[in-house]
Structure formats: structure tokens, C-alpha cells
Length: 207
Image (cartoon, rainbow, N blue to C red):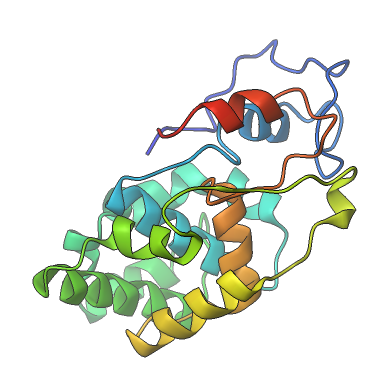
């Protein structure tokens, strides 16, 4: 996963039209919106890591997670499910004592459990990327919203994904979290019609 918090000091471009949820002048948010959000991702581990971060967001603002993202990467061994699946009680204690991340026992346990669920699927021969993308028919759903507030917070596809993930043992994967995840990784393109990166995110198939 790319380090999205390494943003050039002069990155801002407040004059560019963006989706309405992006605070004007916030370099980190603008950079995330312009270079990450809505761009199709197909790497299985990257998808798993993003799903975990969206689960960490539950009850919080996304900017909180975005600002702590590098801390998560460091604390959770690069958000590598192969490593996290083997975490011990000592690792749980270490994470609970880390002020740079979300110190929630339930979210820490969910991350470890989600890593084990990911490995179980892989052991069954299930490609996590193909499996997730199957909920949108293998290609991005491109919506046409005049304003970002027109977009829903969940959909039939995110409901189906949520139920399937829960059956697989995943936690913090409700339909609202799944829809936000689908938007972020380009399964659903919800860039508003006047957004300056909309055309590019439609034409660029994967990262």
C-alpha cells in the first residue's frame, strides 16, 4: 500500500473542483481524494488492509484514520494479514498500549480475526480480490451524482458483501462500512460529476 500521508508541502490546489466531502485547503485530504479514493484496486492484501482501516473508522471520522495511517502500518506490521493472523496476547497488549492507533480491544481483536479469516479463504483457494469484486460484477459501478450528498450510505451490493464477509468470520464489516470501502477502492465510482478527477478514475482500471 502506498504511503498516502507523504504529501508534498505545496500540495493543495484549492481552486480545483472536488467532491464536496473534501475540506478545501486540507493537503492530506485533497491528496487522498485526488490520488487514492475511487481508483480501482485489485491487489488482495491491499484490499484486505483497506477493509481493516475502514473497520477501524467505525464511530469515527475518516480523517482520524487517515492521519494515523502510517502509525497503523507500523504497529500492525505493514497491515500484512500473514503476520497479523499469528499475533499473540503480547501483541494485543502492545497494540492496546500504542497511542498512535485506535486502542479498542474489539477492533484489535477484529483485525486479528479478519486476518485469520482472510488466510482461511486463501487456503480454500479463494482469491480475495476476485471474490470482493464479484459483488459489483467484476467492474466498477459508475454513478452520476451532481453532489456527493446524493450518494447513498449503503447499497444492495454492500449489503450482500457485508453478509458474505460476516459468514466468513469478518468483523466490523457492516453494509455502511462496506459501501465506504467499495467507494474508496473503486468498486463504486461516486466522484461527483463536477469533480476534476472523475474522468481519470473512470478510465484508469486498476492500481
